[in-house]
Image (cartoon, rainbow, N blue to C red; front, side, top):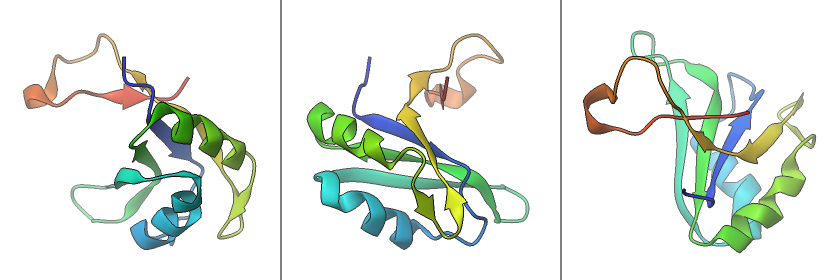
Length: 98
């Protein structure tokens, strides 16, 4: 199970991917920052996934939980692989927060 991917929730709809990268890059090397958007409107859905190069960096970044970004207190935790549901969505794995 991937332990270097974080779920980041309670984001302001105005938060950008660049702002997320800046907020989390101080904890270690980032592999990917993916701001989740609505497929129809393109507007942020208020959450993202941040993947670090190492598990240690991801664990360090958990201290962002409860910190303010763009006026909202973040929810940050290790992303868990989503089980059940509607299958494999075309080969992409699904993650969710617990």
